Image (cartoon, rainbow, N blue to C red; front, top):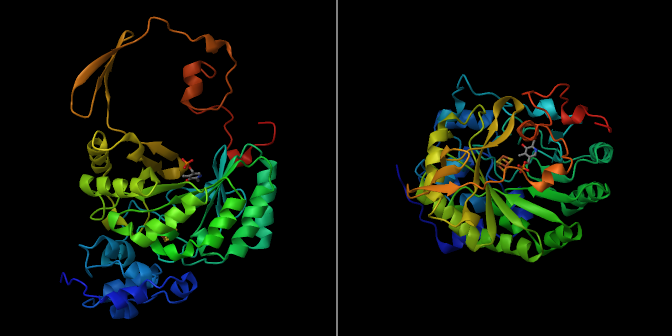
Length: 412
Ligand SMILES: *Cc1c(COP(=O)(O)O)cnc(C)c1O
Ligand code: SF4
């Protein structure tokens, strides 16, 4: 195939119409209709079958970024169903992160002690083929009801250890400003909540949604942080960059999480170029995610060793601020774990030998003093290996009486 799109500037302008309501209501939701927008594209029967199993939708804006209607195009790969999606790989599952285990109240995830995620809806401008929440996005679309919002706020009030509330979905920014404000208001009414994050791919999929009114709204509930999801430098278009700039100017820091995807961005040069484009636009690369083991994405998965290789290449090529943390969200609800190349080559009590990105081995002399005067301060017990190291819990690998955060009472 490899048909390069030839669109006239007028056609591109029409597809990129700067009106988000228009973009939402003119989403392309069938592969048959997509043909009108992608000259040379003919969906196969398998692709059509897959698009019925896992919902398909794409905004005219995002479709306009597709340059070739085949898998050599990263935007096509992320937006258009492929036959391989229909193949169920035996080790892949629907809810690999065990999110349901950590949900004390419908739509609220409490996995880490100080953070909670609210799943506001299941509606997205585009149904990304690599989506972790494929099990419900595009299927259960409804926006958070007043009832749910009240339940969430009650839970947050009962759990003052939650300081950081992450609004997610679906995409929270597909909701109207008014609905979104309901949520922001309710979350802010809980005094123990310090920061609100919004996880959204809107700057990538429908940047015209980032209106001055929305920015003003977010600023009113400050501090609000946006975490977005650019995967490829081609997504960092002038319109996307301007949308992020509006957020940053309104005092909303923008961070990015990418997903490592086979044939899309699993190459050091592409990742470097993505990180540079983000940094030029004041977007901080936060995480690079190893793919979750969800059904329907086997063809987009990359080996962890490839991720390590890429991280190895980025170190030294890019400044530290531009390098995301590579993380794997463990199956079975184990949570996120950072994965790094090995830098410590060897250790003795007196020296640590490390290698740098060039392969140079250098030893670092350790200080003679072992203890810190601060060791006399009582440590707050937080669980995990940190407690084992400090001797608070000398042996337990799994702390005795461990309770999931959502099962803990107020005195725990
Ligand atoms: C990723 C995630 C968070 C946020 O984690 P950070 O490392 O703070 O970005 C919170 N809750 C759940 C369930 C998550 O998967
Ligand atoms: S925007 Fe996010 S939640 Fe929605 S389909 Fe894409 S990856 Fe999934």
